[in-house]
Length: 433
Image 1 (tube, rainbow, N blue to C red):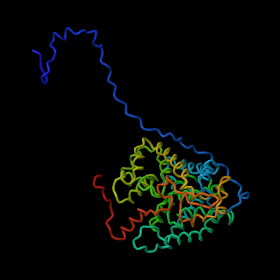
Image 2: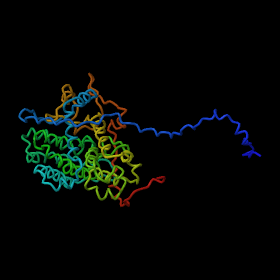
Image 3: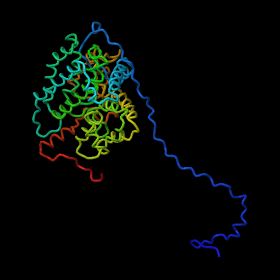
């Protein structure tokens, strides 16, 4: 009697024997697993490092105080095809390559040139100035402290003897080179700081390189001694004067203030034997190796400034990058980001300063002809439109809503105010984390 399953009868053996076997395939079709969709490929080319051009003879240069020249989209386009654009990329990427596979302590252990000691002494002098220009009581406000302007002005007064010790050849050259140093600590009027100010510090070093004061042999020490000292100094300035993030992307950025430490830091870790991109989630590695590697130090400091535990909530971009297969991929991505998100963004580059050592391209706007305020007095960011009616502000849709100088309080300021109120340190967990 044929068996039944759920009331349905199965065919008997005799019926199965009468089936025409020629109609049955000899082999069942092969089962092929579904392929996982390949991740999207980045179509942007990996930026190469152009060769550094030879230094110009200082006798042939007409030194003058640097001014803004990128005042419109047209100016920005001229800049991106200029020799100065390639000069900046060459210098920044050369510094990054000089840091490749090197610990900070390795550079410390070597005999550094005297000029590196002079640069570190200048930064120590800036640190001393912070202690002299104490912040004003703001009654709990988390926005920029006006005492920062006193600090800025004091630095400008001390700058000339500092640059004379470095060997900058003349007073006019000092006026040009020192402007980049002053503007590397933030904007005097807006009391804010961002990747454009960080770039000013690199341009200060570039100017000294163009004057043959910082030859390529100093690049490892610049990337791993001088630049980290500057970053630590900026943390102190940010926490003292509550510098507002200039154009912060909030959680959708690498950091509220900085970018280049992630590029130099990824280069440091290119071929590390055991630290992987995912290691940034390991608190023990951050603690033990953060003093040696800039990238880990940045992650450690960034997370310490947050009041919520969990990188996927506070720094989702860093969290995503940690999934990269290698530091080589991370370093390549940082190169792309520098070209696209720093040099390629008008809201950042509109504040860039051009002089004789970092010259503007032919045809770019001139501040004195347009009649706008100097950078240190500019209170409103954003693109400018220049026509017969004068200078007009242009509202942009790709600048995260910050093109009109909307003030963004600092998370560092929030942490400092919490300490003043005696509130307990530590993280606040998101309930569903």
